[in-house]
Image 1 (cartoon, rainbow, N blue to C red):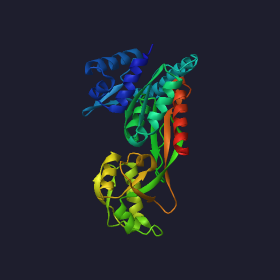
Image 2 (image 1 turned 90 degrees about the vertical axis):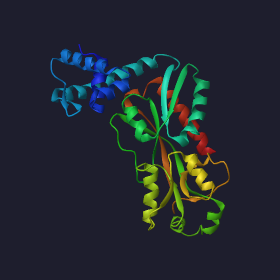
Image 3 (image 1 turned 180 degrees about the vertical axis):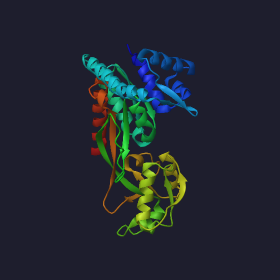
Image 4 (image 1 turned 60 degrees about the horizontal axis):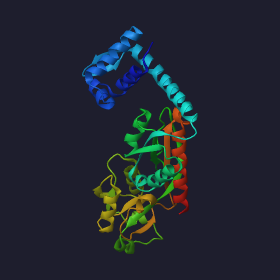
Length: 304
């Protein structure tokens, strides 16, 4: 009989490539991970891994088993979801992650709604960018992830992951009063800011890619004076007159002083705020309850 826990260990080894990485992720010792793999090999009667340099790769038979493991583990999660639906009230722990601006606006509202309606359900929250949190969701380390998609830069399709639309979050050019006074709102504003300093997110992030693409479409390379994933840092640079920035409406709630804003493009564009979850857990009562609370919080924001 193949052990479910050992299938999870094999799946993580396929993803991470080394025993030490799997051990760190699963909070096991390296020797315990090695023992789990050897025991699984005895259960199926074939070698499942082979060393390639400093990493372990799955053998062809290991690949076959890990492909079946994905379906088996999905079925187990669906069974757990069906069992959870047999209870009248959601209970247990739900693990949620979101990027900063959603973490400081949507998430507290939603968790407050959830606590009022379902006091036996506990939310464990962590902040993170979709580049890190979506793989964690796929690996079943998280239950729900709030992600984002910018115009022309959709979220890559992820096997086994479904996305719900929460809200459209308008994108604004944020600047201080002096910069605002120097531009003509009736003309192409981004082109008028070619000599300005820019505050953007970290290299290779989707928001930064979108901003850089917009500047290049208007004939210039942005002069980046602030690179930070912390939107509050970007806002402080803008408020001090050191930079301009493209910020979504949710992020503007973090401002501590008055800013001037103009649309970030000729046609008002928005990023999409999305809710991601594993398809196998779609009907789990805790997931359903949290999705509903987030939808209520998003509707409140959109109407406000």
